[in-house]
Length: 428
Image (tube, rainbow, N blue to C red):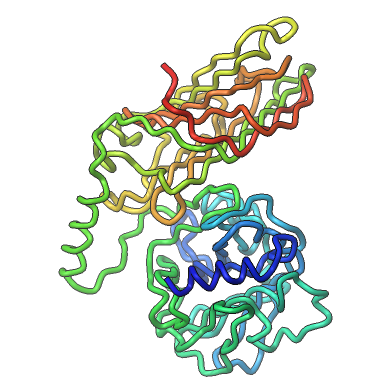
């Protein structure tokens, strides 16, 4: 509670124009992950940042730095080159290595930024400290501050018996400090160091967990099978009880949700260039009756429907109404059976239609994301398409959005709709 109050005070103390990046935390770190063989690849590393409030996406010129075990040396792994588009409480963004091609093959998603291990260095898998951020509310010129000083960063994670200087001063009132290093490490090739609380003590705030790095578009990586770390049978019993209480929605219960963003792109001269992206982020997003139920798309498959008021046919006078099949074989669980973390759909070759990726995640992310491309998309933009109904069906459960508000429209080329409230009900 105290951290929430501190965040609110920090937001009041600085106008949105200045609350650029700093109300955020290091949320997950991994150093060396399994590649698809599944041999361990030490170059596969990532750091996930979680925003605690809106207007925290001006991350240009912040730094990601790795310190050695005693803090006597460091490497600036990345100076962030650009901002991220999406912001809001619990919205995430991702820095990774060694490059987009390698990371995508291993995880199925694209990080927002990359560093090259062979050029700028790596996160030590055994001990060290990772720091991210910059001094102040707006990231200053990196040449004006000392990257060797942990107190200059927004947040730091010390791990594996790190014995060097730690972050002891918050970068804003109520902001994070490091406290004691955690004895855990992010480098076993299977688990990541994942934040579980915000008490300004790395030892208490981080635990090992199956990796779930999430990019700024809400897509969550899939590293393959992972059994969550446990220490006693009591932990198993407690977890099972929690699962029972968090998956009580009857199967097939519709869930209207707010729409964060919808992008439709068209090219009348080349339909292969059509694109679609839809994104929702809201705490109401859940998995219904959960894994193994009629709401599980790994068992019952799914579908994705787009219905526009106009835009199709000659002159764009007709409604577009297209439903795309998402077969069960392309869906995977996020995490293990019974954890109810989410579902991930992948069809990079577009073998089953124009939908390339989809994800529904409960847990810490609470997101629905769908992306597609190609001539198989039937939603053209011959006129203003509003309102646009979106229905993602997972097994028996439907997630529904209706976009009809803020819009950027170029007839025949692009419609960008955003910030739509949840509809009263799903369409028939």
